[in-house]
Image 1 (cartoon, rainbow, N blue to C red):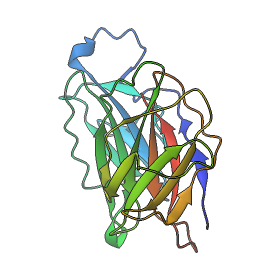
Image 2: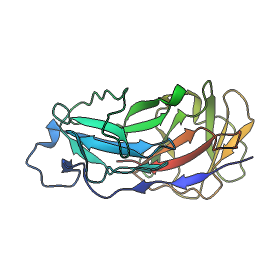
Image 3: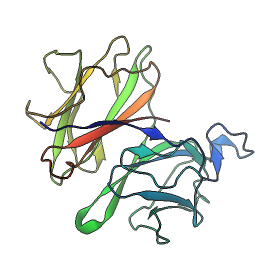
Image 4: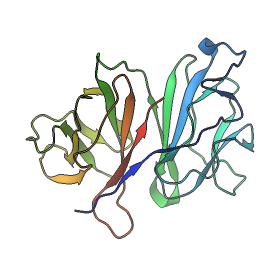
Length: 229
């Protein structure tokens, strides 16, 4: 089985707007927190009002922008292929003031780019962390995901039947010991991807598992995790 686990590379800056921890005079209730993640093999730029944003340039596969505060009405955000001046179609954000979102860009058919926007609204149970799954893998794929103690029986999936272009709800995961993450075709226990047995989570924090299309020459899906806002 081919697999690839990659860690998120956060770009520590802002989109030429107000950073999450900035002293902007804009009321936080009037802004939304947004993070962009690239799940394609095409380098992407995030732009604000037509200019490549600070911290949003040349995002490669598995990398994300910083969590950034934007004005949902005046943000003027767009996504472009790095080096291009033309915004990619299909990105039509609808952010709610006070909300927090992750936008995942992934390859569509015939060379197009598609986007899935996920709300980050979730509070993990006391002493636990939150994890969710987004599937931007092969057309027609659907997956179950299990998070267990290393080597434990699969049991009941934490996320079930996650189809392409969708994300699961957050679920709580243990922070007291390393966990094993395993992915199967939906409704089966046939493994298609594993993230090993040394995954650790931080209490009170959120993460997203992104399942992507197979790498060139491979037949099974790939994936990576990103830290939440």
